[in-house]
Image (cartoon, rainbow, N blue to C red; front, side, top):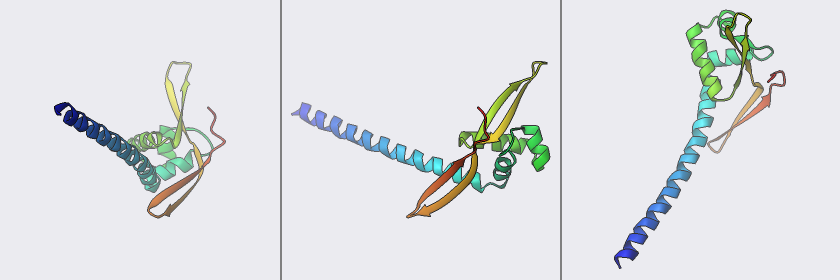
Length: 130
């Protein structure tokens, strides 16, 4: 009898674990959508995306051209990379210095919300060279 009770406790615990994992996956899906929406709502992030649409640019170039503080550009680029909205290209100079260039992976964005579910449609930027 004790074995049956132990088995039932174990079984119910396993089912709970499965339910918990599916809730985590669902939460991650919403977290990614929310992170992308938050990033696109940010003024500096949008400027960086549009400034790097045609040509890859260094952090310093983005900062100077868009008149955004360099520290903010670093922060926004990191967030954009986390969302996979920007491509990083590494170039090695003859003197051994490493320069990183960034280019927007997206050309166009369309956002719609239906029944509390955001839908984000991206148009790929074909100018990005990998």
